[in-house]
Length: 272
Ligand SMILES: C[S@@+](CC[C@H](N)C(=O)[O-])C[C@H]1O[C@@H](n2cnc3c(N)ncnc32)[C@H](O)[C@@H]1O
Image 1 (cartoon, rainbow, N blue to C red):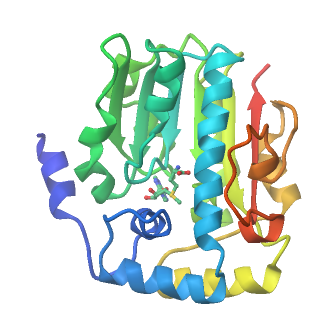
Image 2 (cartoon, rainbow, N blue to C red; image 1 turned 120 degrees about the vertical axis):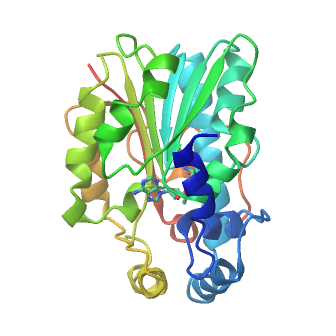
Image 3 (cartoon, helix red, strand yellow; image 1 turned 90 degrees about the horizontal axis):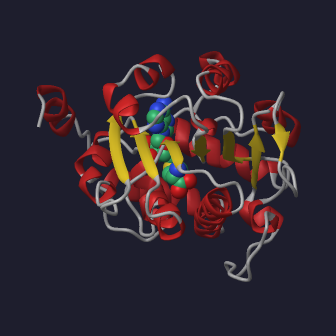
């Protein structure tokens, strides 16, 4: 373990809620602390379907990754805002189709680093790596040695930013960040993204945002038009930007997954 990794290990702050640990609570994992459970329970009071949201989002990641590996022939993935490992993780989905797939994960939360070993269990033919990084500093990801050792950026890469950008408010320039990341990838690359929206239940989402902000987590949910802007300049794959349960459904669905219950938009787009 490097000094940096050790520092990150010691950095876990259990006094305040963190998005990765709250999400783990919604997914009924076991890697959250009291502050996360309290905040997540408060979200559930104002938005009772949040667990449906989390599970439906996770299923979108599975289907989008499967589509990218099987239909689009992608063999390289960069997943930022990975979250605490939850089986199947992205590399397991991709490597089930393409055992030689290479996957780089990145997250800023030290608790994800603590569990990163689970993300390293690659197939022998494939490869995975984990970078501790904040997406608001895309250069730290793009210049990381582990990225270049694992991915060949002259060949297409699928950049996956699932349920991440609503934690990046406008003042942190989320559109510029996505552009910078996509600029580093060659044509034939893809952007897969999901994002919470207030469109179907605006008053509830205002209350959800208040719970996150009270815990020190900036949350900016975005309208369909604002989410679409992330895809400007890329070619949306059918069915375009939609609610995740309607993005190439495969028969597996979460009970109760209506548009308002899920409140997410999701899409995959190709860089021409
Ligand atoms: C809701 S979880 C989504 C996990 C996974 N991508 C999924 O969709 O199942 C959001 C993740 O983004 C991470 N995150 C939030 N802000 C971040 C930032 N500025 N840089 C890197 N990761 C961030 C959190 O730590 C958390 O793990």
